[in-house]
Picture 1 (cartoon, rainbow, N blue to C red):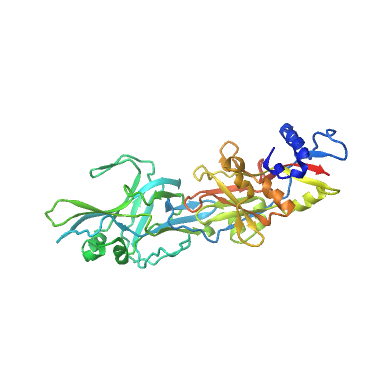
Picture 2: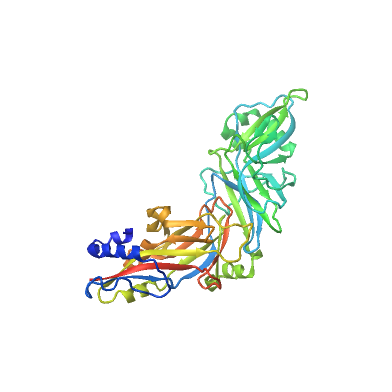
Amino acid sequence: MNSTVKRYCNFLHKALIISVLVILYTACSKTTESIGNGLLSENDYIGAYYIDTLQIHCHSECIDSLFSKGLTTVLLGSMMDPVMGRTDANLFTQLHVSSTNHYFGDEPVIDSVVLQLAYNGYYGDTTTTQTVHVYELADTLSGYDNYYQFSDVEVKGFDLANNFQFQPRPKTTRIVVGNDTLSQAVLRIPLDNSFAEQLATADSAIFSTPDAFKNYFYGLKICCESVSQNGAICYFNPTSNTVTRLQVYYRETPDANPMRYDFYITSDDVYFNQYLHDYTLGSAEFTQQVLQNDTLMGQTQLYLQSMGGIRSFISFPDLLDWANALQEDGTHLIINEAKLIIPASETIDTTLLAPTTLAVISLKKTGGTALLPDYMEGTSYYGGSYSSTKKNVTFRISEYLQGIILGSENSKGLYLSIAGASYNAQRWVIAGPDANQNQTLKCEIKYSLVKE
């Protein structure tokens, strides 16, 4: 017996019969059929039914804001999406001294300085060459401020990376760097020696505490030049102090032995991602719906994009009319199971893969959002994971729809988005309810009618 039926204690003996009927009920069709006629008297009738033609309205829209500060994974790179246009992911971060009161020597000589980032995955085409730029921040980062995907910080004009080019290699391991053999894939960006000389010759007081250093050196902006086609967004672990670090190779005097001093990024430091989207470069259908607000286009095709990009709104405008028409003469409608099925569009891109998990939240009529009551039943029941065999995502929204029918769920509709959208670069094209393909967005409902 499912969780929805349990709440209807005043129909307990009827609900027991319903559970048996639902278990036996395996045939699904688009026509409404009754099962088990004659088991009860005419005045005590329960019917088990199925429908998948409930009207759905939907459209895609831009996300206003996405918190992007202090995440466990940071993104860097540029990617051209043939449907949704170009996205650039930039990183702003403070640096943390590895030891206080450090002294570079009376006549320090800088041999080299390298910014090393630990790969943690990628999305897109890693065969595209990217050009990285690194700039010194001209303003401070504050631990008291919130930073979002649109936040920006002024930088100084000199590119410390000198237009360094690379092809992402997120799966390469056992890299030998000096005396170290790294078991994790890394991106090593050589920086201009003048940058390290600035640090090595500064007043030693700046190394007295981590805060003293941050007050002297505000941090770095790391970004990639916008690509014109393909490209990828790389994932990095910012606080992996054994791998992610700024390495200064130097000698205390011209004749001294080589040494190294490291700067880290820690959880105590401020860092955030900036995501820049140019949707004018997207397809005509995409720009008409998302930029020109043609919501009718969503009935054919929908879009999702992480990094503060695109979400979709879904509503069921005829739900109450449908339910009320069935609840005449003392009949009560009980939703045994409702599945929202979200299929991929047949426009499949083999490089820009489907997202791992989607998320659904309720948009309240009074403003704000909330989790669906079905979410509390656990992910194995609730759903949300992409099925590579069915090429769709399914959510159970039984309690949510029942709550709307009963008047306890004050919801305008649902926001559909990509889970973990602040720290992954995924996107997806969805077949709307009126799409011209076999699988379309729909809601399958198994329900019962209980007459007092």
